[in-house]
Length: 402
Image (cartoon, rainbow, N blue to C red; front, side, top):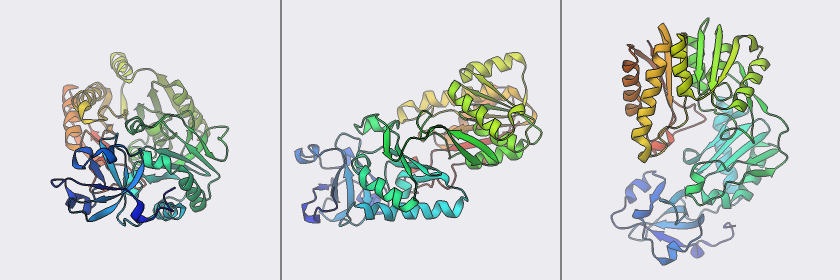
């Protein structure tokens, strides 16, 4: 625990003379390894060590978490270098995050902490009623799970706190993949989550990520506005995603496609819970294969949504990822009935809006269709963006009329 360590005893790390100290002062939260003086003492620090960051003239810039084994060697925690990461510090950050969500959402189902944008870099917390799922995707957060959990229970009043260690970046931070229970007991069944008039079933221990994707909530709502009386196809549906929202919006029918049988089973449970089972069907299989098969079958839908996983999770994967997004658009466009709607989504931060838009447009054209772009959607307000960090604005949803 660092809260009892005097400031003078904290290690110090220093920027190189040509590093972007101005960017750090203006809110950029990361220091890359090639911008830091990495002497033997710095390289010997344990991952997650708390230190004072200095510029090249030894002026303090703030309190940072250091991980010598990561390309992001420092993450800014507090602009006050005398801050202490005790339970009270976490309570202040969590209370501020909670105040925003409580203003926006009537029910306690939302992303409570969105990493850097909520002042807790590398930390994700999703709330499901009386349960919170914590993803400590940075070494410093892993080391401070004790005071973090205490603060989380004190601020929110939840009875159960689960740790999810499935985040892709944990390996980059040198962390394990062991999930567990931090407080309370594991829920004995999936948790029903009300959103946009539908009920989603969230498996908090066996599902993807933390159990449900809250980020698409406003885009689900926009799709539901297009879906009244419509035949809807939801590809990469997970636990019902767009399909259940569309049914709640009055869709005549919805077909969910996903590669995961357990996810589709949860979608069916959600449809039943919402009284929509008679209008809902599923089809398990590889999305590209199913799209091709539906085209061969001559299937047509009034609304088609494709919400794939991140095809371009890093810069090195950008070009093949863009080709995959283009292929999805090419296969999906012919399935849309005349004057119907196509929604294409990307959660790849490496593929910015301009490149994703271009790939989608190419795919629609190659699919033999003309389009009007009618709406561009992003993540909901429980996924705030840090203006200085482009990576925090990862989600894009493009709605076209074909």
